[in-house]
Length: 77
Image (cartoon, one colour):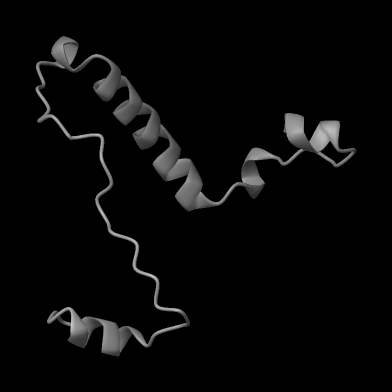
């Protein structure tokens, strides 16, 4: 709403917010609380290393995903 007001647009009403958004935002906020204070809720999370998970590969152009899957010896699905 503040963004719209700042840009001279009418505010978005709650009824205009997608049902999916209304469903996932509370879950996202709950997850934020769980991650901020896991001990408060009796949770313990495994350590996740702060390092890249994926490698970047320069293909010089677009590549068909089926070919990429085949080269990686994995399923396209």
